[in-house]
Image (cartoon, rainbow, N blue to C red; front, side, top):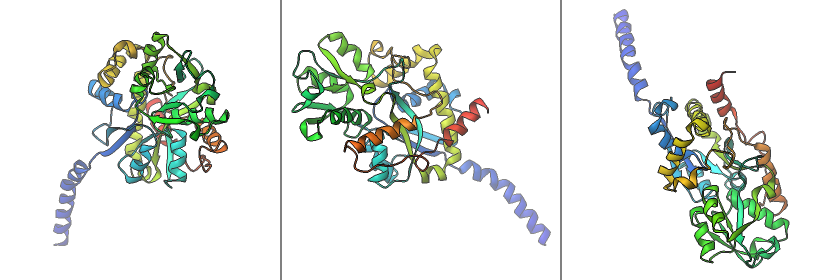
Length: 339
């Protein structure tokens, strides 16, 4: 009798085991992004449709969902509520997530860097012959930003503070990066940060000049990094290594000159920007991206330290070792490249 029962249970185990494996659902990874082609998340979703062979684990252990935000700081709440699993933060947003939102977060990967030799560095444009001749002239003027606390915004405020200009000395107008050229053209603002996809047209007009660049603020900087909560990493580590292996393959595909034309076509499909405005993308005319997705952690720390010293951030935070976890991208890279 006992032997018969055990045989039945063993047979049921063999039948039910594959059913249990098949019923396991892929982990949903919602990824925040603010602008593209700088942020690759929406482009990777488009690339996956064209080249599914690059994404070995998509739809199996994970699914990715790009989620659009105005900038870094609005993503803090989404990360806190679990409505976002990967946030695209600037250094200020990373610090505020830790010190103000009290989130146990980890810097996990690179998005875009600025000031790397030979690559694009973001300019802040003013009207030639206009009221702003020097940084001191920013007082009393209208300044555009994509979102207060974003990477672009933090760099601008650090430069202003170094010249004795407080936030109360100028008017801040938040707007989408795509609307920046029109805002200064229509005289609604006096200074705008310009991304590379919009630089071509504003430079061609001959009416504007850069007052300064992000490189002048920091030297080399980590403008945007990917940040996750430690609890999500712990709960889904295997799926996240799968995701980052696919992500690194995608980053390298976009950076490969052999794929440049198709990469620009994908950027055109997603952004609806003219092809001519996107030819810079993924070349040295673009901001730098690490082919291994490795963020410049010392640069993030310098940016946080400068912001605290100048009174932009209220509380300092030391990222290493607690708030950094590069093991996900390191394990993913080993899987792709070997030891």
